[in-house]
Length: 335
Image 1: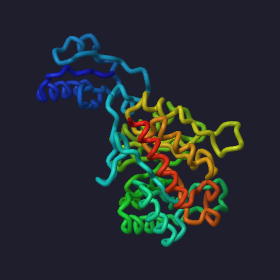
Image 2 (image 1 turned 135 degrees about the vertical axis):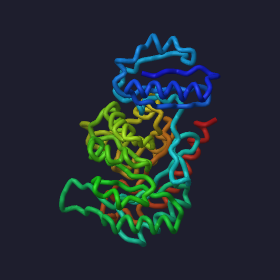
Image 3 (image 1 turned 180 degrees about the vertical axis):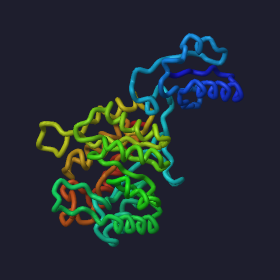
Image 4 (image 1 turned 90 degrees about the horizontal axis):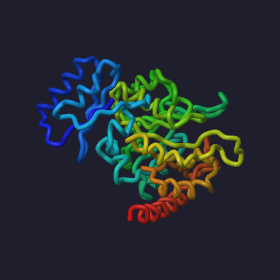
């Protein structure tokens, strides 16, 4: 249930109303936008008399929300959310984010070389996998804690905020200095992990699962937000279909649909979606054109020798070319 508050309502009236709602056993989510204040009621609202609320002097209208996701719902939060990344950059709003770096961190030289290159090309954040979920137990699993240390060294060298994937809630102490915690596709419905991330206040980059609907993605975001962490970034990275020419099928229609359903920012990962470096550029351009809030691209200084996902990784020179083309698309889109 949401209650739209009339313009001119004083802060004292608003505080008093919120306290009364809490006394009725429901959670209260206050969203103050530029033109409208919305109060979202979370929990069992069956005991709340809708007609009574409509009759209050400060209430303009009351609506019940049938969607199971509440905190992530645009009806609860009409304005786009802008996620602050350690006071360095933001995701959402007017800034188009570009997250770039290698699939896995392999050495200090590798990660720092790539970090300097992607920053020079306009990347706003540096990605790098320290813990790697691999289909085969015999494949490279990442440098783990040592990888995070190398990522932090790259941050010192470049100033770029860092993004890396978490596999287990027990690893959270290792992520204290990580700017954005990524939840990979395989863990999108690891609800115990999501609950723990809800207790943090770090930005969470939540990737859509291999075969999950948008509703399921938003419900996973809800798990994090229900714990009190509203700093969630959604990521479309393709879903598994019967198509075999690409690694996954990139669902770009998810971007405007998610923006319609939710106030959370949405980025696109064309690297994992296609699995082919030659397709990354056109899909990155399409992501910018369809309204994504950013892109996430794998960049390696020597893709042929990469220990993980070399075929989908761009060289620094190719990434620079992509960024120049993306900026041209954004100029046209924003006119």
